[in-house]
Image (cartoon, rainbow, N blue to C red; front, top):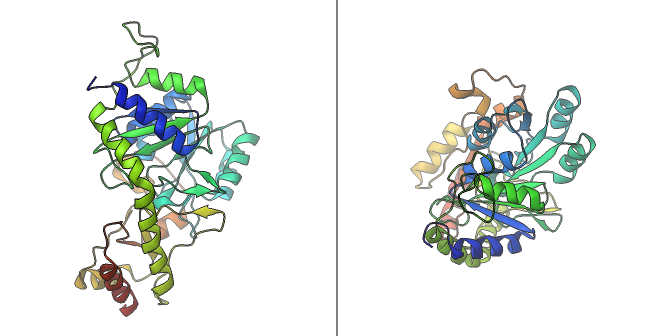
Length: 333
C-alpha cells in the first residue's frame, strides 16, 4: 500500500487526464521515466536517437542507459530547442531510430516539423517534458503530442513529488511494457512471473499523494509563473539582453526565464551584486562533457548559446516587489 498502492494509480489517472492521454505510468524520477520510455519503445542496443546537446544531461544519459547511442543535432537560437532542419539533415544522412525532443525551459519544441520527420522516416518521437508541465503546442498539452512523453517531479520543477517521474502515451502496448519494466518485468497483473528484465523504478504512494495535491495546484503555479514572465517581457528594456521568444502557437511553462547576452560574466556579476539569484542553465553542452568525450557533434549554435544564457527567477513565490527589483537590475545593466 505504501510502496506502489492505490494512490499511485489515482495520480497516474489524474495526470493522464490532465495531459489528455490514455495512459500514464509513474516512476521514481524523471531520468527513470526517460529510460522506461525507451525500453517500452524497444529502443536499445544498436539503436540511435537524435536529441539535443543543450539540455540537462539526463536526456542523453537515459539513451545510453537503455543501450542506445545519442546523436546530437543543433538547436534554434530563437527557442533553444532542437532545430528541425538540423534533425532532418541527420535523419536523411544517417541511420537513426528515434527522436528525443526536450521542451527546454518550458517552451515546447516545433512538434509539427519533428512529427513530420518522424512519420516520413518511421521514427519514434519522444517528448522530454521535464521542464514543461502545463505548456501547450497548438492548443495541445505537451505529453500528448509524441509517441511517448516523460515528466520529472524533482523539487525544482513546476510541480513536485520530492523525487518522481511520469510517462504518458496513447499506446496501450507501450504503457503495458512501461508498467512491467518499472516493476521488475512483471506483467500488469503482478505476481511472481517476470516476462522481461526490469528495474524497480516504482513511485511510492507517499510521493503520489504529494503529486495529486501538486497537480491540483499546478494551474495556479503556472499562472503565477506566466504573470511574472509577462511583467519581464513588458518591463525589461535593454539592448544588452534578449528576452525569451515564444512563437504564437505555443504557451510557455516558464520553468526558467532565460535571457541571452554576449556579456554574460559581467551581467551575472551585476545581477548578483544586486541580490538577484541568476544562474546558468547549462554552461556546457552535453557532447563537451567528460563523460561524452567519444561523441562528436556539429552544434555551433548550441555551443554559442551555452556561453550566453542566463536565467533569472520566475518562480511563483516571487513577490511583485521582487519582480520589480529584478527588472530594475536587468534594465540598469
